[in-house]
Image (tube, rainbow, N blue to C red; front, side, top):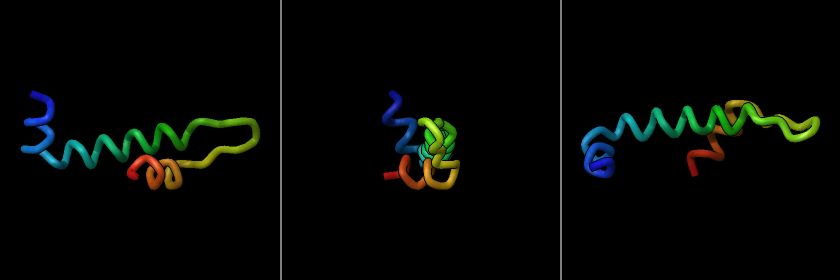
Length: 45
């Protein structure tokens, strides 16, 4: 069911990957924080 939805609506996959990447980029490990751009680029792969 989910796979069919994602195949028929590829925009959902794009939006979800951007949101996930932004959330990954907002995590801070000690003094290091990647930021939204690095998180989105890394989350996309």
